[in-house]
Image (cartoon, rainbow, N blue to C red; front, top):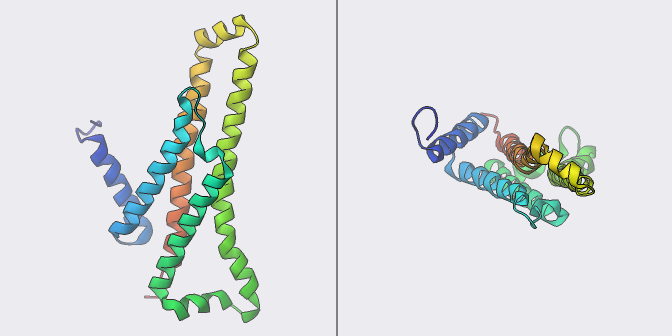
Length: 187
């Protein structure tokens, strides 16, 4: 239970309901469920690396590109649903028809942005952790010093848990922001 006496699962669900409601301007169950599922999946993928002899699936670019494509296609589906197919296609020609290629590239760059941000941060953290583990494994003194000072635990928790939570939240928030922008209507 949390400090207010509520079960943690209820607090977690309430936090995501509030987050999506504030961002989208109203409660939409399917959007809340999607963003929560994306967050939990990425969180588990990012944090599984703290288990010995396992790697984070998000260290693989294929995983992060797949997640970016899922988020992109979800956003595009609901953008078409909100504006209609003609309204959606018309947005690619704003403010001028000449902007069509740049607007298409701008839409597709969101996949690259989401994917490479997640991949780069998780892969970078894994590299730093691997280098740290390699350095301390060179001598018994450095291993003992790392255990006594708690530095081993700090490095593992920072790159295994803290960074994983932050990156899952960033990916989810960017997806939610892109969805909010894509589904805004004039009224």
